[in-house]
Length: 355
Ligand code: NAD
Ligand code: ZN
Image 1 (cartoon, rainbow, N blue to C red):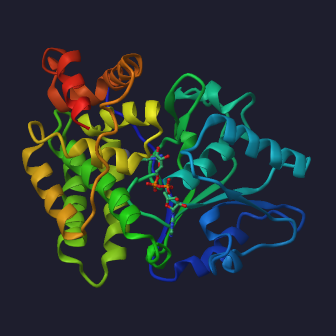
Image 2: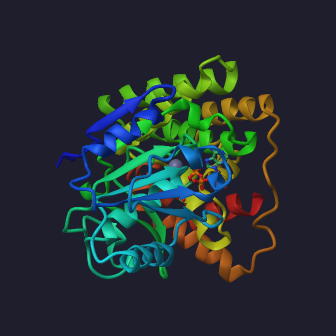
């Protein structure tokens, strides 16, 4: 069966296009009483972007704390805040920030119309009622969250996205000026998420012409951004993120992502940095990708954290291994149908203990 997947229907791209957000939202406001909710990364609470939000009448701004990657309990709390604020549903949710704030925007827009807790919907196509109109505006590029059909959440039992066609944004606003002031390390780690998406997609057994077309363009853009430093680097990184997301939407990620999920589940390691930590030890599986990644690391003088796993309790290491090995499609994409004979518990343990 081929996947018939939904993409974001409306995209605006260009330096300064954030200015047009007011006009874009105007079309979605049915009357003067209707309100929108802006879920904004709280890194902007005291930045000029705060005064550029096109707020009207009863619009509500919720500053998102992304110290921890989004949890289902946090989504539930934000939904509760909005319900307490008004008896009516908002006419739009605008998620502004990196992958975390955008994912919160997606999840809140879904949970305002679907009953229960966000934790009830972690999985595939469990959402049955369309979301509130929702917009994604990246201020950090690489995850591809702006295009994907998932919102990655940590719940009481698992770290798993709410994957559904309703999760997909109705609109994205890609303004390269918004990613100008990201600190170098964060810029690098989230950018490497994109680079690793491409390597894992392009070398995977699930590869097809669709994924290859987007993946090749995206990896070329990553090479320019991280090895050549072009003057329009931010524009290119934004497009790389979008295309990288399109590439994996029709293929799959691989070993770095599977193992990074394990790190994240047990140690709370964030996605971009976790992928980078793992990828550095995967030269047996992605030799060219890892060599190029190291060139990029060197060029930007980024030093990866080391020694995260070696002092873990054996039970915790076991959980880490089980979480990683549970991501069957990722392993199958990376190593083929016979993956269980290649990535044994001992082998993955050996890899983790180096980190
Ligand atoms: P992030 O959103 O967690 O943000 C990382 C840090 O950068 C935060 O401290 C944030 O405040 C800061 N930041 C964001 N924009 C900034 C700016 N313009 N200037 C200064 N600081 C800024 O990081 P991320 O790597 O973009 O996203 C990771 C999250 O995305 C994880 O929760 C991961 O699970 C999720 N993710 C989702 C998908 C998807 O398809 N939905 C894909 C990959 C990852
Ligand atoms: Zn990723």
